[in-house]
Image 1 (cartoon, each protein chain N blue to C red):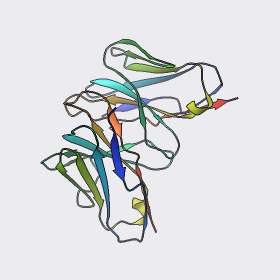
Image 2 (image 1 turned 90 degrees about the horizontal axis):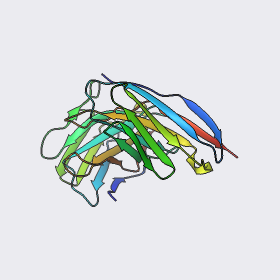
Image 3 (image 1 turned 180 degrees about the horizontal axis):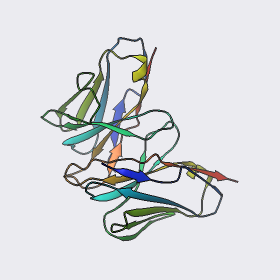
Length: 116
Length: 110
């Protein structure tokens, strides 16, 4: 079945560091990928929609200059958390949908980001 | 906007049946997903309903009523490994965005 790979799984770094997270669709092409954030014991919150070959669209309240998204190919989207601070510590998860909007969204394994 | 309501917690014994209800109010509706999420892990896909009615897939079944804005996930022959959070996620048309409820934490006891 469709597989989404996310890397890295864990990141621990100092405040002020920029962190890049990769999301790859392994056996299908994804023109659209989604980035979510989840705080402990809370729901997944959609941050942005990553569109191949065009700008990402961000949800209300999400700073586009803080969370840079690049979707340079049909199988790769990256999220860069710029100048990360402790409040950015969270579980970041990407998802992608197989085909032209058909089939379920499949999630990557997530990236646990801890900013010291 | 999206308003999704599901119970916070449910407890059941091994081998039993549990039904997780979800009601939703959405601005546009394409279909509804159910995902399972174990603690510290990403969600995994369980089911997708577009049309009204019951979809059965092994021990898990999902029901949808579009007119009532209602869905349920039925877990049969519960196993310990089914202890997890279950997420109801209606999907918007056109942009295929998902909105997630807070999830229902199911605890299976021996």
